[in-house]
Every structure is written in C-alpha cells, then in structure tokens.
Image 1: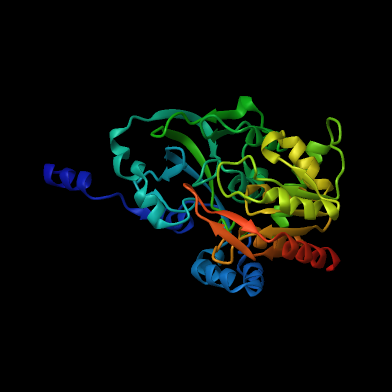
Image 2: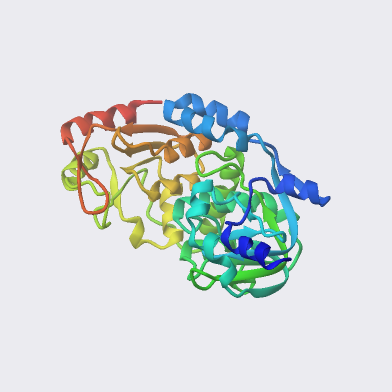
Length: 367
C-alpha cells in the first residue's frame, strides 16, 4: 500500500457494517438463524399508542430481520459498549442502536491508536450500548443471550463491562454462567481481539423485543431467586419510591403516599435492596405504582398479570414500560396530570393528591 493510501486510511473514518448476516453471506460464511423476525408482534404493539407507532415505523426494517448467530474469526471488541470490528476493519452497527451513537463514540475515531489484548478460544460479548443499565440489561442483553446460549460451545467465556453490577452477576448465575467464565473489560478504551467471537444480532431493539423470550427470561431469573433464601414479606400493592434518588423525584411524594396508603400500598426503595429482594417483591406484587424509572423493569419477574401505574409527564416520550407491560400481558396505566419542576439534572414532578387518589381508585377497579 502506498504512503498516500495509508494516509487516507488514517484520515477517513472506518466503514460501518449495518448487517452482519449480509456481510457473512458475502464472505461465504455460514451463520444460524436463532429467532424469527418480531415485526408482526411489534406491529400489534404499535397500535397501543401513536408514540409507539412512530418508533415502529422508524425501526421497522430492522424488526423484519431474523435474529442470527455468527462465529467471527479475529474480531475486535472495543470499549465499554462492546463495539465489534470485523476482520476487514468495518465497525458493526448492530447492538449500538443508531449510527449517530456509534459515530459519536471516541473509540470509533481513535481505535487504531490503542493496543489490543488477545483472547484465545471462544468468546461471547455481553456488552452493548447502555447494556450495563438495569432496564437494558434485562430487556436487551439477556433475551439476546437467551436465544443464543443453546447454540454456544461448551467452555465459552463471556466478556463483560468493568466492575459488573450485582444484578448482572446474579442474573448470569441463573443461566449457569459464573465468575470463572467472565472476562471483565477494563477501562474506557479497552481493546480485545477474539480468536473466535460468537456474535448474536439483537433481538429487536431497546423498545421492541419478543414477548415470549422476555417472559421466559424473567421466569428463569424469578425461579432462581425464589428457590433460595427466605421469602420477602408479601405485599400485593407496592409503590416504588424515588425519594432518595438524585433526580426525577416526586417532590410531594409523602402527600401522594398518604393517598396510596389508604388503598393498601407499601412504599419500597429498590435501591436499598439486594437484587434477589427486588425480584421477590416484584414477583409477589399485583399492582406496581411509581414514577417513571428502572424499577418498573422488575415487572418481568411477575408470574401473574399485574397492574402497572406509571407517573409520567405527557410531554415525555418514554414508551419503554408501556411496551414492556404489553409484552408481558400486564395492564398499564399512565398518570400524566403532573407539574414538571425544573431541577439541575432532570425534571422533578408534583401532583395533586386528590386527583391522583381518584385515578388510583379507577385503576384498581379496572379489569
């Protein structure tokens, strides 16, 4: 290669691969379809809300593709988001959710300056964009793993983010994956070269996924958590408090909870509980109420139909928990008669207790 060509390669950004299955087909490599497309299921969910319909139209092309599993020789895995680089230098978009996110990632522009660590044998990467956050771990990462796991070779190791959270380690144990098989990614510019990377394409995206796989994922984790240790004190109706959180709080929560207490709700602080305690409380609840937040992810662990009451401003477009409730067969209601109070990070909220009380009464009476 000429000096001029090498100079251009250093200046131009790397190419992006939007479809690993199409890339593998061109290479003449075999791959496995492990789940059918979920566009039909997602199109039904899109009828629930214009906001969901809008997201469906934006993501429809990806949802029409089956989930596939690939064995890639000498692939690189870069940084805490698990960016995959194919042997020809193309960056894989799948798992990064949007081209703009990948192109804004410093690792995309500076990857060539970083040394790599070789990992021998078979590797599966558990990292993706936002994958270490509570909702995305259980909605994106684990269902994606669930469909791939039966096809992975014995003794495969798993690449995970630096300082994994307790819920990551405990939920992986439900799959029979223990710490001795986990290889942690160290530092924001960590770079690995895998002898054989097993890459599963996402099962949908952060909004849409397979309801059946989500239910099975939640059920397996629930059984693992309920089979050991003492049972948490049962409470049919729980209110997830964000009073001790640094953002997105209900500033008159105490007044609101006076009304909830009349209907038999118990106030809980998920951030003070172990992961197993969270699963047990959520599994036993028949009604979960609270301000929009990751605690609603725990509805995955219920064995029976729940009522989900989410407090959220009508100006917000967060549809994740309405969609998740739909996938699980739960009844979702949104209380949006709230006043937004600007704070340094994200809006706090205030509601009118009497109006809220009437709304709760209606929700509890609904089938």
